[in-house]
Length: 303
Image 1 (spheres, rainbow, N blue to C red):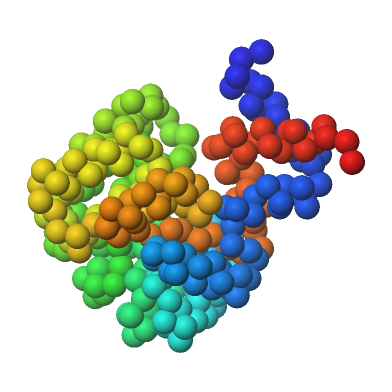
Image 2 (tube, one colour):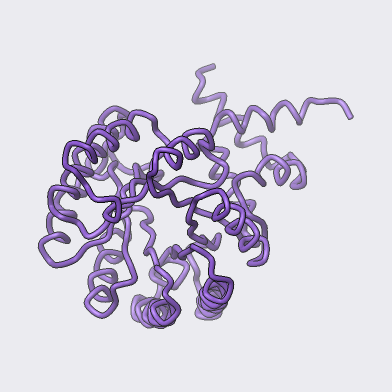
């Protein structure tokens, strides 16, 4: 049996594992189910030298009521970040705000959130999802950034279109981009699938952003090779510290994160939280074979 097939079989078997077991193994990646859990995690990160971004777990809303509920959480989060003086922003998936069933509603809700965030001095990152909504996501970013300066979006190095997207965005005005590899499995005609190709694309796009005078670049990676390349590029191009930051996910690459902070780089950690933690955990398990191994060992451990 191939490694990939074994991994897929084990993922399929996870439905048999009690949720408390998955929670114990997933909690390093998730702040908790409530905003108070998220605030506590952000405070700890701030004390350790990292900024943070709150990420409500949820996507693909199918009803206005779901959108309104998510909007309410984000508005509460923005108020809480401000009142507690946390070094923190928020990240929003547009499908959670109704993009797939009502783009006009999504745009209206996002305007409300970004406006409220600007009034509180909070930054909003429009997250990027699979390729079916890339264009729609960038369109809403374009629309809102003409009115607001406290926002940015995400570009994925796995997509072949990303170089063109960056060129267009940079040509249209001040641009704040979070650059990541991308986690979605896309058709080969629109995406790079080979790991080295994705890395090469990431390096090229990072240099394109810096050389194109992007307002700010968020270097979102846990890959040591890409971190080394980013540091070399920053030195070579003499990039000012206020034009970039490194970003990582909660519970991932802690030693590398601390090393970058010690070197004087700005660091931000994404902090997922919310009731939909199980769906997120299953996605993390698919991405992280080491974590899956811990789960499997617990499955066969005697009590």
